[in-house]
Image 1 (cartoon, rainbow, N blue to C red):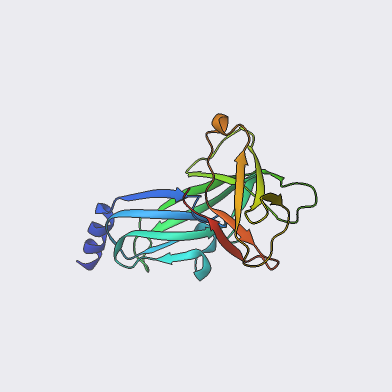
Image 2: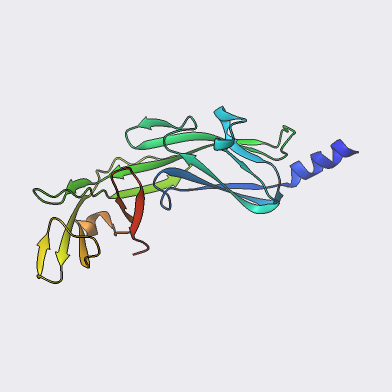
Amino acid sequence: MLLQTFYHCFATMETKISVDCHSDPQHIMVKVSTSVPFEGLIYVSERYGDLNCTAFGKKNETTFLKVPLKGCNTHEKEPGLFMSHVTVQQHPMIVSAGDGEYEVGCKLFNGDLEVGTGNRIDVSASSMKGGDTMTSPSPAPQVMLRIYDFENDVFVDTVRLGQVVELEITIRDGKLYQGSVSDCDAINYNGTRFPVVRNL
């Protein structure tokens, strides 16, 4: 009777997978939505048992797994195309026929750095799209950054701590690419990211 009950639960659970490549530039964010509260496992298929590559269901109908672009066997299928295989196991201890494996990935384009001669600020612009299959032959748009000093009414290359400045970010041929600026980060010498622009 217990096995029949498990089988009934597995058979009635519907699973939907979606990928977010925009909110975290270091990870493939996998969202698993289920028709019933989920108590199983979501893990990178090649890394079963690795807690860093696993998410545990907590009786919610939505569960997230963060798959690092560098780690958990994520492979770069082609320049900028990061792919992984994820398994949704409906029960934490039992493998069943209702479990599924999904291919997920993110396509990342890096914009050209064009800040100005002598500028020591690293600027990157990215546009990422998620889905089960990712293909896009289009080139990346060209992105430029200038820093405006309010006090002296000039564009500058360096700023002091606490100085109020304005960032002017331009996407060349932005209408052609239908691009916009969002989620810009400042990165210090040891790689720590600080949010500068969000949700523009």
